[in-house]
Amino acid sequence: MLVQHHGDLGAPLAQVTLELGEGLQVAAGVLVAMSPGISARRGKNAAIDQTLHRVGLKTLAFPILVGADGGRGDLFLSVNASGAMNVIAIEGEGLFFQQGLQLAADLGIEAAILPPIKVGRRNQLRPFVRCAGRGTLLLQAHGHLLTHYLAQFEMMLVSPAHLAAFTSGIQLKPVRLQKSMAQAVRGGDGWMFECSGPGRVWIQGRPGYLHQHRSTRQEGLES
Image (tube, rainbow, N blue to C red; front, top):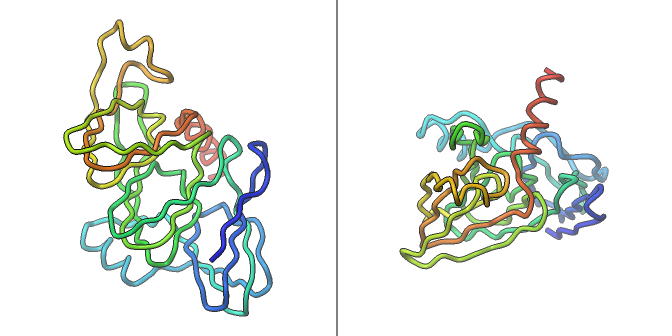
């Protein structure tokens, strides 16, 4: 599988080239074009179904399955206009990211949407997605995506709207800053996520909740 990024922040596209027999899980509403040799269907992986049933989860983060059944081919995915595509390799460790950032994932990755996390009165985040397995994950962050490693017992405060993803070793705890410090926090009401290591966190340059609120309103109009 070959992944390429085209365009600027105005209207970027992700191009994924699949060899014969390769497959990919794709998020709903992001597939804009594909070669004749690429097939797409709505389906669920049996292993994922068993995992979701065991933990009581029903919703898949990647409900579309595509495959190069007719030979080598390309598919094109629409990337969030305020950000860019990011490729993350998952090697057996768990990973959590904000719902709405997903583009696609290898078939070896299991992903399920978790219940939403509420932080304060204004920043009610959309649900996080939990990933496990091995393979490549394609995310569309808002602005630049920065990776930061936290050692054991090391902590960092991150604005909820800017926390794009984190590995399973990170402990997450909502905390409220003092009023004098809250004024310095971008895009929030003084609430932050206290992230404790060991593990990695991904911080996005633009607040994700602005795009999420627009998406929620649009979904309401289309339903």
